[in-house]
Amino acid sequence: MKTKYLIILALILVITSIIIAGFYDSGYVEWKQPNGVTFVARVVGDEISATMETIDGYRIVVGEDYYYYYAILDENGGFKASSHRVGIDPPLEESYKLKRRGRALAEIEARRKAWEEANRKAMEELFKQFRERLSNLNNGLGKITAGSTPIKMGIVLVEFSDVKRYKNDEYPSGYPIELFDKMMFSTNHVWYDPTGELHVHPEGKPVFGSFREYWEEQTNGVITFTDDSGIIYPPGSDDPWHQLGHSKLYYNNLSSAISKIVDELGLDEAPYDEYDKIAIIYAGDTFYGGGLTQNIGQGL
Image (tube, rainbow, N blue to C red):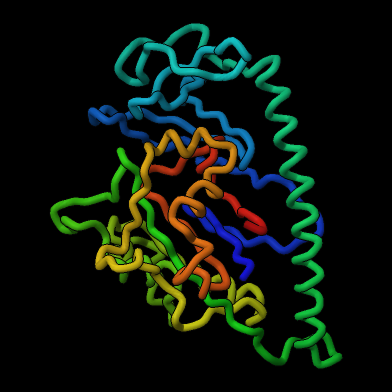
């Protein structure tokens, strides 16, 4: 069974005949160092490359200890961590508006071309299937009159050897799976609170509907999901979180982190192969510009 895997913070399905890397801009938001010190910074980039910059214009990167450091250039012209931590140590003059150079830029461009070509071919096939589905559902007057075959989608929650699920006093074992199910598959606008005042989201953040509702409404029922879509537990475990064998940075430094995770967890085997699509949600902050950047993995 051919399954497509997706990494999420914001899960995106795209059906189009022209494929480019998806642009992302976090805006200037507050970030927190492991010791609790906060600072304001912005992430701008796409699936291939991303840049993080403080509100004062200094480039920064995540170090191996998960602290954010002011960036300097390595021997290839790429960013690496200096010894100065953001918000803790003085910024470095050389970090101000720092740009990648030389081999690092060439490697990024090569990855971008390869990514766009692979996704162009994959999306051409998806677009062909989408048009066939529309044709089958069309009554000849340009109006869809029936729903499509629902997608059975599974959610795989993963932790790393050094980064675990978020826990607090209210949720000592982490967020319950019911919250993930509501976020992804609830109907009737259960996952809806545009002001955050109702605290539908566990952190009181505004929410505007589930993943399922978005795609069913936006496609007029062409993309739908089965009622048994949901969290997949590790075989023989009563804990929904899968344990990975390496650090978060280890996977982020891989060119194909998702392939490694699929192989390590056996996501091409039972019980995972019963699902049409699998979404992987990983613990901790979203990473940008590495193997754990949110994107679509095609044909894995």
